[in-house]
Length: 395
Image (cartoon, rainbow, N blue to C red; front, side, top):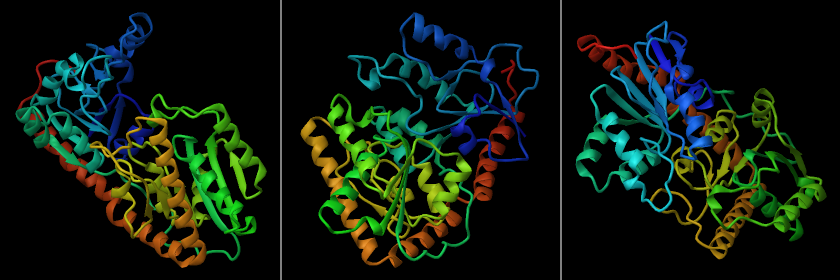
């Protein structure tokens, strides 16, 4: 089958470009908005539009269907979309409620058309946000829900069983490009507090920190960002304590090998649309301590890891409305990290059991072959309808 896509970056490779029997046609430069969006954002100072509007007569090969990620197609051809938060995806307009966003109102009819034959939410948390968007429009909500399925991304296994734990140090790993948004500071604070309180000794730990310390902005903190003194204190702690080994980045093969040789992963993130690194760690036999935002409770249940954190809003995210609220949530994350790490240090068999549990859940719930079959079922329904009612124009 020929599948039209509009990009071949990580989201597409993780959720769409998964079947070697398919041909994937990258139509990125056949999209009018590929050319219009730079003009809109730079010259007109308007928001980017997440739309595929095909240029006529440019595609030499015509796809059987279009499969987009986070985009709406304006076309008569059959299409579907995988999305991680909401669809249509629109950026905020100052002073305008999301439900009243004119771009949202413009795009909804295209999603409701019959040639849009499927919407794939990557988690139950995503479905919750999507339905919440249309809660005051029951007719639209009903039609959106009828098109939507939840399909968690696939994940191949990197090992069939957890590697036996080497005697000696507990090996911990944190990996997050945006170091501060992903909870890197809370990891450093929790571990150094345990060291300062003499509850553990540096000789008991090896902590690999993979992340960019220059990426300081935390979208979850909104206008209540941390200050220069806070960032300096975190970086000084990393340098001062020998148990920390920091790298700004690591290539994927080396990172997967690090996961396989680690006892526990750490991701007390402040904001996360899904948590692909959790799947990668679990598939490596490395159980993870995560926060409880968005899809993390779905993919990191008690049998496979540890889920910690504070109160969530209706979107299953943290709401930070003051510095005090941010500080309270930070301390809650730190305290839960400390308790969990102490439990593991006192009984390392917990990590082994949860590591095995993670491998089992990846095998059962994220099987790539099953995912391909589920996706094919959705595609074939769309193609069958395409054959019965072919479009009158090209894409």
